[in-house]
Length: 50
Image (spheres, one colour):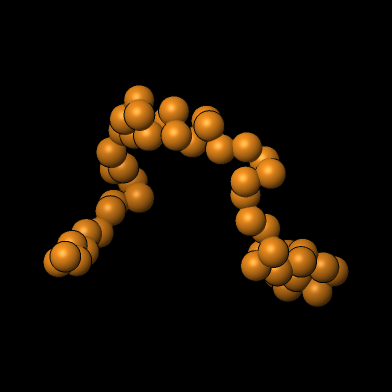
């Protein structure tokens, strides 16, 4: 299968289809994997406020 690469303009995104929105709505909180997200500690907020 050939790969297709595309670039999206964040200021001009396409409207999601009804099917895509339905798939997103069907995802439950328990289905989302959060383990790879870094913890937001005091160091993060200190650096972010500068």
